[in-house]
Amino acid sequence: MFTASRRRPIGAKLYPYLYLLPGLTAMVVTTFIPAVVSIILAFTNYSVLHLQDWKFIGLRNFEKIILGSKRSEFIGVFTWTVTWAVLATLLAFLTGLGLALLLNNRKLRERNLYRTILILPWAMPSTITILAWAGLLSTSFGPINRTLIQLGFKAVPWLSNPFWAKVSCMIVNLWIGFPFMMVACLGALQSIPDELYEVAKMDGAGSWQLFRHITFPLLRDATLPLLISGFAFQFTNFGVIYLLTGGGPYTNPASLAGATDLLATYMYKMAFSSNDRDYALAAANGMLIFLIVGSLTVVNSWLTGAFREVER
Amino acid sequence: MNQGTPVQRKRIRWRELVGISLSRLVLVVVCLLTIFPLLWVLTSSFNIGTSLYSSTLIPRKLTMAHYINLFRKTSFAIWMKNSAIACIGGSMLALSLTVTMAYAFSRFHFWGRRYGLLALILIQMLPSAAIIVAIFRILQALHLLNTFLGLILVYGGTTIPFNAWLMRGYFDSIPRELEESAYIDGATQWQAFVRIALPLAMPMVAVTFMFNLISFYNDYILASIVLTGKQNYTVALGLRSFQAPYAANWSLFAAASILGSIPIALIFYSLQRFLVEGLTKGALKG
Image 1 (cartoon, rainbow over the protein chains, first blue to last red):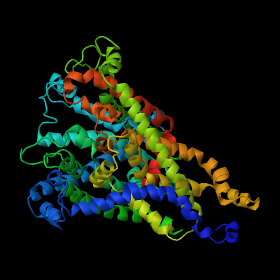
Image 2 (cartoon, chains in turn blue, green; image 1 turned 135 degrees about the horizontal axis):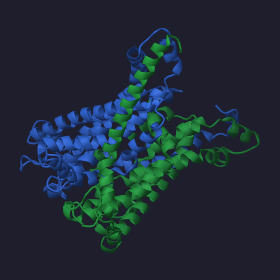
Image 3 (cartoon, helix red, strand yellow; image 1 turned 60 degrees about the vertical axis):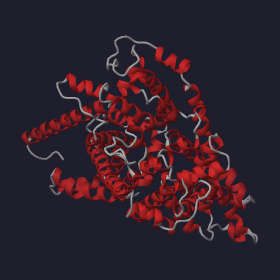
């Protein structure tokens, strides 16, 4: 590649690895070793009850999750995680797309003002805004319920009823997530050349036809990777659920999983706040999460052309 | 396209007007819905009364008492300091570990380059939830639990793939000719990197730094398992501790949210163009 690099001394082959060394070392310590430890843990019975005398128990943790005593809990959490990931991604995407289509209009002189206001949720630290939402949605004292009552509606059990708690999580997550989708869609829309529309208009296409045959297909190709990475992100979402509902409300007092628990919060609780602190079972859960998200990432990288970029 | 009779033109203009007014209406309503929660928190922080129940959207009487109490009665200042240490330390560590790596991936050909880049993409998506148990256990063994050094190491190490990928793209956009002419003048590879490529990449280094800063500030899960002592709480952990008797501490919480959000919002809006580009470019097909 370099003309100069051809004259490199012997041993220069090792040179690039020196540049990689600091980063690689840190990755070994903070990612590879933890990953290996997680995999090993997943096959043991390491928990607060067996801190010293832990031993390998083979596939029993996975058996427990997929077939055994944790089965119904896991299936409940898994189903809700998939539902959540699909709905949350689609809601944020469609809202973002709709707003982007409205904002992508040069005749709307003040559109930068709207844009500035609409990305506010993205600009704020989400841990703080989620906690604030938890207060706003409070059933007995919350401003939202008081406003509803003033308007003549009944108070909604936002965080205490299993169904409404799910709705609340969706609303808060949408509020946090739509600005990113909006900005991304706006970028995709603005990258469509104006000439395409000009030519189509000259051929007598109406505005619906313009959308159907130009905007939609081009947007679809550009935003599919966005949807997949969004899904992968929502699949492992932690903050919204943990800080808003803590996974609750709980319908079954014997169960560790609440109505809104996602895989990530469920395994966090398994390891750090349950009575038996089952680190090994949580690690097995983590491996399952990684397998699912990992395969999604491969698909996404293939779609975005990241692999092709690497080939160069 | 000004063809057609004047009547047709007028009809088109009228339809456009209706369309634009409808767009405006929708956008104004969505804007109001978007800022409603923030506005409520903002006014609560200035309103007299401390509980959630006494909060109103329009304050009855303005007061700075909650902001003063925040510093007198809570450890908010310490939480801010802790967050600053963890975020700045983590961002600096992440950057110093990755600039050379990103440069190597951009400029050098070496065995394993392709698979290294693929591995970075995969690891980038690894959810921290999947390995927190192991991280907890390892930090415990190293006696780094409840230390900022532990958290900074975790932050710096886990963001390497994302940082490297982002900066490699920027190095790719810097023309190689500049370094090549330096080689002709007798510069070594290291000199070409430090004196030519690195200064040119400084804007991206700054953006990546802010990028990390924001995501570390937003982190709850890692901070919560590493920092267990109350005196080491970050802003995120500290604000959560208000939650238990939420209704009672609402005004204090509101004041803390506002003060805790301002630095991040300022960074976000001032670097908006770069941040937005950096984040969406990775997600969109170019």
